[in-house]
Image (cartoon, rainbow, N blue to C red; front, side, top):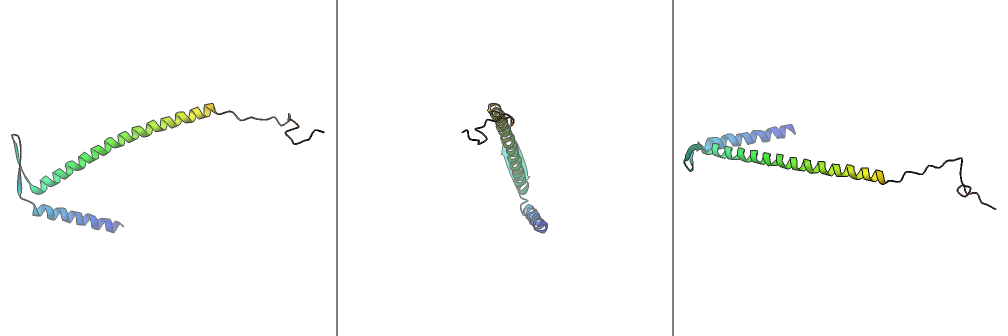
Length: 109
């Protein structure tokens, strides 16, 4: 399985290198008074990197939200278990020396 993983990584790296070598034309970007010239492959890689960082940030936010929800639900479960134990009737413990004759199955004649 490690060989398959290595082959996939090598193919992806080969694609990245050949893509970079084929797309070296400069691209001019302008926003208001800001003007920048960057190579095409760098523009695509930077855009991809920004997307990965943004998705990672959104994943972290979602993880914190889910952790908070899990903690709330665990607290509710603990409270409900505590209430259940508090409302539970204690078991009846019978003294074996003081048995009622009707309980032992003895018949009264």
